[in-house]
Image (cartoon, rainbow, N blue to C red; front, side, top):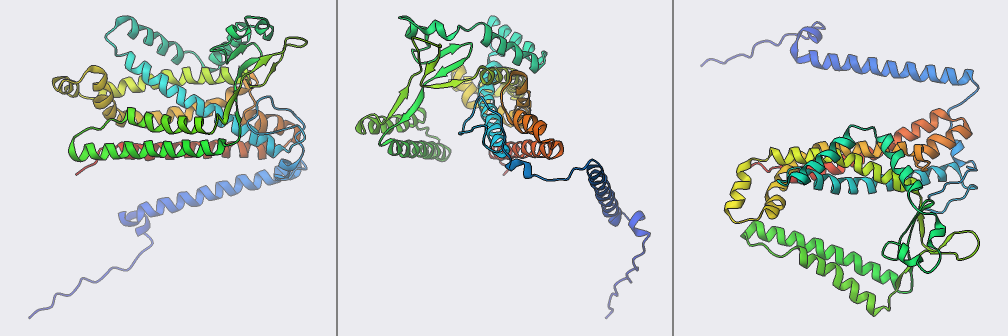
Length: 407
């Protein structure tokens, strides 16, 4: 009986760090990390020395000082006696507002334009081509300024809403477009409005549960259930019944013009033209890029899918909604994430039309007043970094949900 002896292990030698493929990759990474840390340490030390030579320090205490400047459009209460931190928060909320509105609107416009560009109607497809090419090949800043100029010059003055035809001049008798801004109704919460809000939340949850149940049942049995009409019924009927039973606890405060003195609107909400112009320009500009992404995603789906759907008797509209677009989403979502990130960062061009976003507050007035350029820019960059990572994370989660499941 023979016993196989293990070959003797060779002792480790420093030369293996470079010439042995088992260690070479680790060696390169460690050296690169050391060089990166040394570079960062050198830059930080150089920064501290230069700040000390200028008589400055690195401190964020300026955020607690009085801001001393007004902001036209705010989502939360703010006065010029509030701190720079409060002003920065107002700017952050304004940025998130225009970014959220822009992403939703650009998605709707992009999907419609992308689908219509593939239409067999020559006029419709060419009109969409003109829209896409015009907005993709002209700088965004020009579109922002152009839309702002149209809103400021082409809309009437508030005095045009005086007299007997005042209500007829408003859109649906509720919205007034003027050269000083767009006046929209505001919600007035009365007694029982909180109950109405709870009913609305429960209705939304019920609609989501029904959609999930219908999808699982169709996957298990192949029998579809009505989703759209049942979801609308779950959303509208409980809310409407509760609204009537509570005696209309939620009302609208419609803006009305003063008949004498300075032409000002009472009630409602004044949405500045700077916000509307930035929103429209961002949506139209980004929607043109999304349209091309949608068109490319649809063309990436095999033509045989459409032919099979038509053979089963599906109409073109249902074929697009149920067969083509769900498969095209796997191609559309990754580049769509980049467009959402671009729209959010492009909102920093708001300073061109005087909209007080975070770039104008924290990275503008606050930085100039306090002289804290480094701290302000670092906070500004951190904000955009966090928002971009959140958008990427949420969209990547959705992308994984719709990805093909391998057996």
